Image (cartoon, rainbow over all chains, first blue to last red):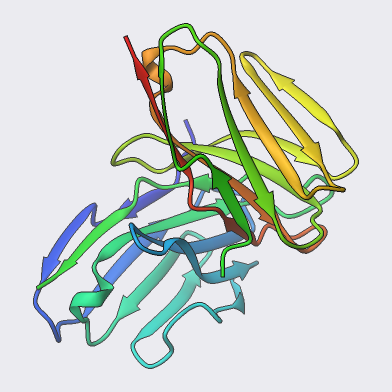
Length: 115
Length: 112
């Protein structure tokens, strides 16, 4: 059963620490997205990759956030240094853009708490 | 800013009743999708309706799309306790691209 895998599922850290979240997209998918979910802002798009190339990271705070796809099986979202306002659930999603572009498949999320 | 806005923000009904949720959006779209999110879980795709479609069915789900009013509705018939979740509409702004913008969601509670 193909699924998007995210690690860690939960992370508690102190302000100023580096946080790295990882995502394994579904094999064969050519798009990867990072979303952040909070009660106040809802789901915000942070980054968007197609064929491993970053297409849009306009939703991401550039000074502390970075997103990469070292290879087709791994996407990472890094926060350095982390701040309490970064506390949220971070979702990775993958999909396929093509002749019949359709749904996104979401992971279970990484719940981040920055103290 | 959010592209889609769901209405109502919260809905509580009795099991067996129908639940209707609405979504409004601001700009022209290619597709509109609905997703469900159970508490503490990721989003799960429910149904996609293209801009040239007006209505679509999938099991107990019925989705309508009115591009002239920039609105969509999701109807869940014969609701079950397992339908308790948050429901989100999402729009893709660029043809052929999956960049989705999500609304704030409707929190649906089905009372047994």
